[in-house]
Image (cartoon, rainbow, N blue to C red):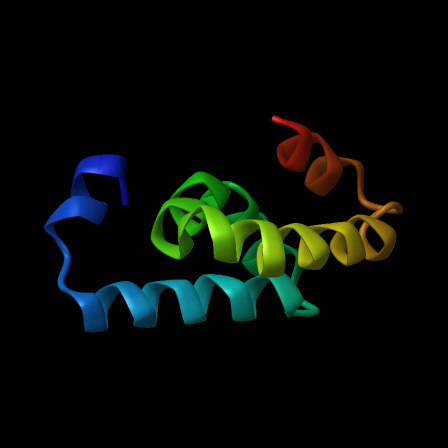
Length: 79
């Protein structure tokens, strides 16, 4: 999903997309985490500035602690 696709989705699609991507960040499956990490910009756009600061940033802080043994995930998070 690219930035233009975000603008064209309706509100329910956006909510579903964010929920799925956030769930994947918490997943035990490294490929699901990687998928969501690669889409953090989209997640932040859909959440908006306030929710990104209040909800996403703390979640990412916890995520860093959990994935420190996986260099590929850390690299993609830093990217």
